[in-house]
Image (cartoon, rainbow, N blue to C red):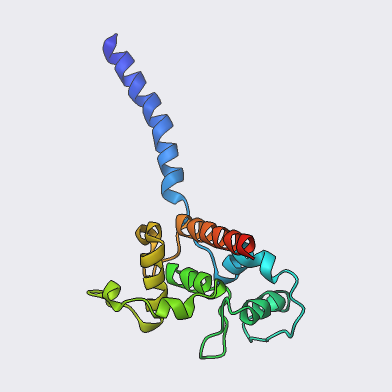
Length: 173
């Protein structure tokens, strides 16, 4: 009798555990595109933009105003090949770059000490954003994965930094 109860318990356990594992294993990794990040994080800034519409051959007509606003406000820019790549998967360094540019801290980030970069092989364009994150927001560093898609946690932390910074600036004004 105990053997039958044990077999029954194992079968029930497998019926509950295996489907949950399959759902978890098949879950798509979290990925956001450049355009989604711009819309989501900077939407309130770019919503009322009525300036010139910068055209990129890879940007649809419906997204042209969002992209133009992001270029105007120096949040993002196009690539040397003339494309904007709105549907490119956002990496943590892209997200940090857009945040630092939006907050107007790029020049300050460039002036931070290079000792922060010792032993790291980073492309030059990433260095100011990496220095900014490691100096002022060390809580970002566990989520700052060079060349990897930006994690949900990284994006949420950047959003908090932007909100806190903008709130402080409004209070100081």
